[in-house]
Image 1 (cartoon, rainbow, N blue to C red):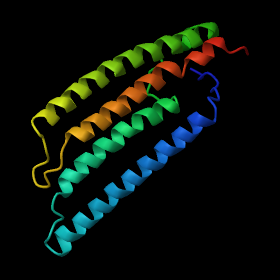
Image 2 (image 1 turned 120 degrees about the vertical axis):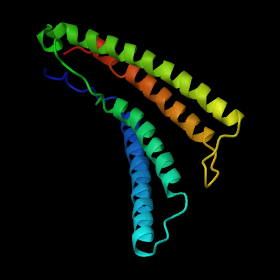
Image 3 (image 1 turned 30 degrees about the horizontal axis):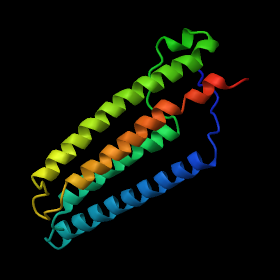
Image 4 (image 1 turned 180 degrees about the vertical axis):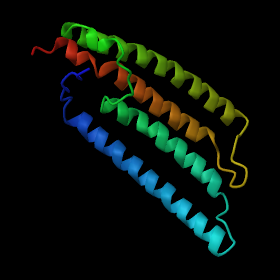
Length: 165
């Protein structure tokens, strides 16, 4: 199916997308540097970086959840178009809006559960094994990113309903 023409959501959405991409790039570079230092230390000096596995897990989770609002802003969610390409063009904006709202509700439920889980982890002082870094802040970060993704996913398709081509 041919994708509907993108809508310019203005400078704030573009700036936010650039900021999220830049922050994601910084986190990925930190993840890469951490891995390189750990591998060099492990194989050349027989001295792996202490806590590298934990930091890798935390950074990877941060990158993944930070990517959710970025993907939503770019309207680049994975989709399977088995039947939708046979629908008439006038249906497409409505289909996209309903899919966005449904996906937003599902992501809102995921946000709620991640927030609750982060609270549980924080209540018993959950931390990583060797570095003893608290895990709850990462859980709250993931919940906030998922919540932002939910709002963006639900709202981005709506302007197509009112666009006059």
